[in-house]
Length: 294
Image (cartoon, rainbow, N blue to C red):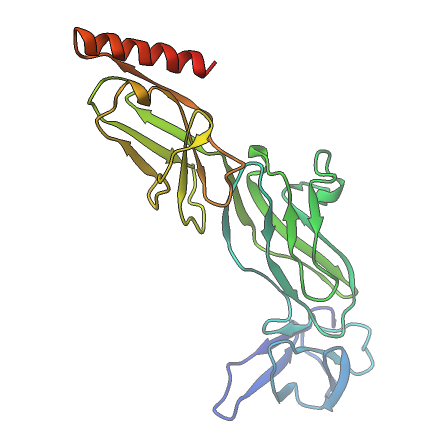
């Protein structure tokens, strides 16, 4: 019975070699001759089940028994089957474009038949190629090739695009799937505390996302749709000190480089604090501001 052939690999010796052993679960008789294959090509015939050689990471080895070459052991190698992502976790803004950078390796003598990305693996069916999933047409683009690059681009990101993305490829001699890349899609939210104040009180604006964007260089702040002069900060917090009626209005924020994707607006109301003439001026300013913002 030769169908249970396996190749076992030892650790690297001081000379830089590894020793391979062709083993089986049953006892072979008649002093069999072992045939060794490197990258799919026959390299040696031995009466011993041991074989030593210098290894490269991409080299694969297999063995068979002479006379039964059609039944060989599964190929073993160090790094010939792999999928590598530049980032295992990605945070991106709703409405933006993201590239999931990816590379892959496989035995050099194999030919790529199919390569695709998926998020769901249905029992009894297998993984669903994203390019054929409703809602993804024109939304994703495979930037990779059938050699080593497997980069995926997703445009006009939606909150529903948050998922674990996996790359899978099928060769002329096997198949392999990478581990998931976690993509979290977030929008920008402005928090205002408090939203209604009296004159000379402070107001704190906080620009939040539900995951950490990388990199963030600065935040931009807006009042009534216009940039607030000299307001760019490296902190997600912006404080309006000692507000007056002139600070009444609608505020929003954005991440630098994505100013076209600002947060929803929050409205600040400033109440008049003093009586007499100042109170009247405060009231007039609020009325004028409200009229100008409609």
